[in-house]
Amino acid sequence: MIGLQSFALAAAIIVCAAPGLAAAADLPPPPPLPVAAPVEIGGSWYLRGDYTESWFRHPKDAALPDPNDPGLPPLVGVRMSREGGYGGGVGYRINPWLRVDATFDQRSSSDFRAFSSRSNFATGYNVEAGKIDVLTGLVNVYADLGTWYGFTPYIGAGIGFADKNMRRNYTQTTCLIAECDGVTGSLPGPRDAVPRPNHSVASFAWALTAGLSYDIGAGFTVDAAYRYVDLGRSKSGLDAYGFGTRVKDLASNEFRIGLRYSFSNLFTPGLNNPYGN
Image 1 (cartoon, rainbow, N blue to C red):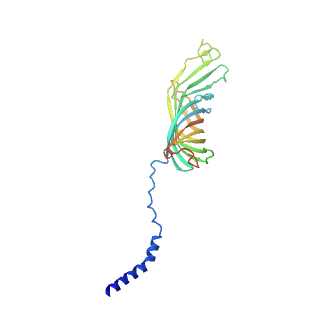
Image 2 (cartoon, rainbow, N blue to C red):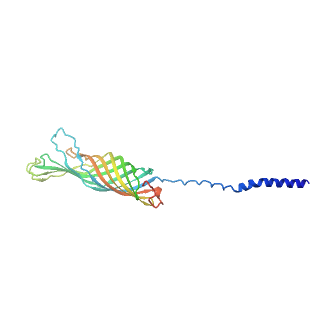
Image 3 (cartoon, rainbow, N blue to C red):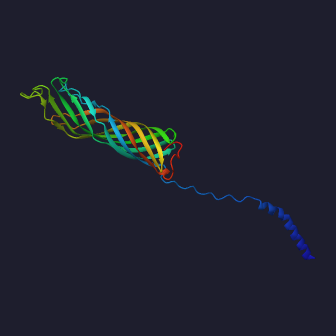
């Protein structure tokens, strides 16, 4: 009798629990465990290398007034030759449209030339000539303006320093008439050149940039830009007579073309950033 009662009780428990077991069987499986995102190392950094062609603007005479020689003529026809150069730097992308970099650019030696004449070139004139080497170091900030068909226009500005080394400088007088230099019996023609020592001047520099880049994939971006750079002043050492060449308002209009290599896009096929690179 007790066995029959136990069997009936067990059967009743199973019947009551069956609906709950069926409902449990209909529950969805638990969600998968979250996968940790990969850690990006150096993803916002980039390297750059550039070739630069510099068209130097005409500097101005910066000779100091000489109270013992108030008639000292100013330099005229001041010119610097167009030169190529090279440079490079490292940059960091802050967000999809803003980036910064630090660059160094060395230009080839530019030929410098200027003239002066106490007689307004009637009896003779002086030429001052030499070479000027220009090195710049700038910290730049750029704003990428969007990307169309893979091309990204941008604007930028930078500040830093410019080191101008004036070397192989000399001055030379040419007489157009006899004895124009006050030497009795001298004939028309050039006189001996007077060398002036090398001298380097470092000063504040600033730049404005507008350019266009194109992402070619595998982390590489072609970059072409126009840049205006204000370079400050330059001067030579003093010669045996206590004179030297001094110029101011050095500046350059530059065209630059180069490559940027971004660590974040190493294995991407290109055109992966809607805001440019």
